[in-house]
Image (cartoon, rainbow, N blue to C red; front, side, top):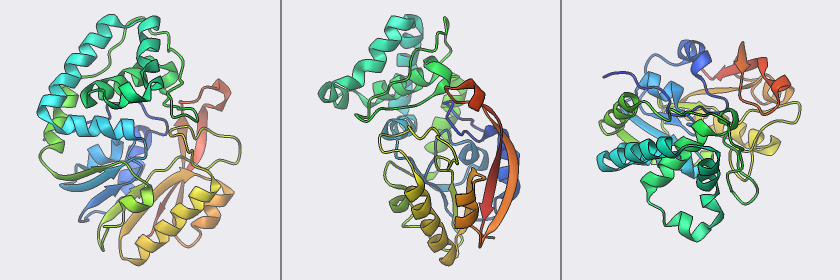
Length: 276
């Protein structure tokens, strides 16, 4: 099967460190779990035959669900074609503001919401996905005159792949998404990163702070005790070093380009942590 690639540009995306992740991944495993799937770079590279993918961002996971269904996939592509033709600043804000009316937004066809998610990711400023306290998308227009929102061949490959495997697509808390994991299953955690400074945690309305990092570390330890293969990536911070001191910590260098402040983009130290 032709390899797929992420259909969105996602904050913290793993394409640039994919080789290092593959080097650290187990050679063999049973079911694959990714509780913070995002753009799914590692997932699409590994192409597991059995998987549970999850993200608390329900709009993102709606796209995966739509891509799983043939008719909805076709409707998604047709809607994106329509969006590209209408694309300009006024159109962008009209699409962005659809979530201000919760009643009409929640009754909108799922393929249309999926098209909205992809379109805003490509048309918004610097590929950010950010919501406010009301869970309303609030990224400004990216000022692109012409827009290519998707590659049809890639989306078709994703549809073919998802519809050919044993897959569960969830949008819930990361802890509950891995409850069914058993010995020799592989779990890859790619959470919103910890930071020693003020950082971007606005993927969802609830954010992801220090307490969540600590809870994640407990989940990691419990899965390791069950005999699962567990891998996690994060920033190389004092807290992360402390929480995972009992495991294998590999420090790597990565470049991060998604940030509204240009001076905060550039090389950073990250870690890949494994229990094997």
